[in-house]
Amino acid sequence: MNKRLCTLWISLVMTLCLVTGCVMPPVEEETSQPDLTLIETDSSHQADEAAPSGQTEEGSQAGETAASQDEAAGEAATSQTESEEPASSQDAAADGVYVSPETYEDFNADTIPAFAGKTYAVIHDNVPYFTEEEIREALEGPYEDYSPLDDLGRCGRAMGSLGVSLMPQGSRGDISQIHPSGWQRGCGYERSHLIAFQLAGENDNQQNLVTGTHFFNNDGMRPFEEMVGDYVREFQTLVLYRVTPVFSGDELVCRGALMEAWSLEDEGEDICYCIFVYNVFDPSEHTLIDYRTGRTYEGELQIAEEGMAGGIVQSEKEPGEIHTYIVNKRSLIFHYPDCEGVEKMSDKNKMEFTGTRDDALDAGYQPCPACNP
Image 1 (cartoon, rainbow, N blue to C red):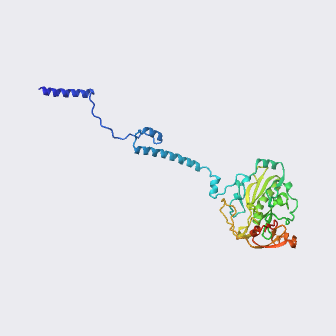
Image 2 (cartoon, rainbow, N blue to C red):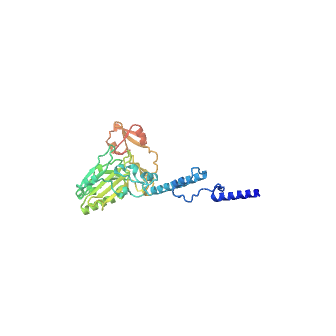
Image 3 (spheres, rainbow, N blue to C red):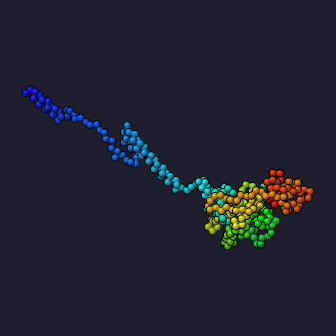
């Protein structure tokens, strides 16, 4: 009886403890992963804060992956922005694309665009390199200015503010007595004016004449000269004009000429061009120029795509031809036998030398500046 009462009493006490909270039921250990559904996917910083400091390796890799994706997205956006910018001149040059120099002083034989079969190529978006000071000076009135010949007898730039007062009243005279640098008789050259006779009336001015081909002088330069001449005569106004022969190193024949023109009264609205005219023979003639001496030889001009860099590319020249030269024993200058200098030389000073041009130079002889052997 007493035993049953004790058992009943214990059960009653336990029931009361459960009701009043004196004894808590056992709690099972949580094994589920943290809920990450509330973490913002576009913020790696929030994900780092949400992740517990003791996160698993997989959780760490997930965070790094999210950060990498954000970084890659940023780089892609930057790359897209950069790709919209124009390519630099260095990048273009590396790709073989022609990029005009930014200044007149930077235009030289190394910056000539590749010959594409036409007489000329457009330079500097067809806008002359004239400075504001040059334009102001040209507005003061007509003038013409020619560079002195250099140590090799080569012309420099010819420039002027061209108007009707400078234009000739009569016809052009004989200029056969002028031998520009690199001039060779019997090679099909023409004496080419930098500023055309019709524009400034300069006839036998040595500072205004270069050795040129018909392709250069007549087909290339003349249309642009006539454009300026017709405009000046019709509107009785001024055009700022500049022609610059472009030589490479010590070569005696120019590779071509940079031609610039700007109508002053209307700020270039009617006349505005900046072009390079190639001094080459018509490709159909299969004749090439040794720009160093002016001698010609058979070969092929390489014709590139328009807008490409590369200048004038010619087939390789054959080894130097062997000639019999006449050497002046006193001056040590060597000539071609038909040179006028040989006719004036006394017989006692004449000496024959047979070999190539380089052989003559190696022997200590100097080439005649007139016949350029």
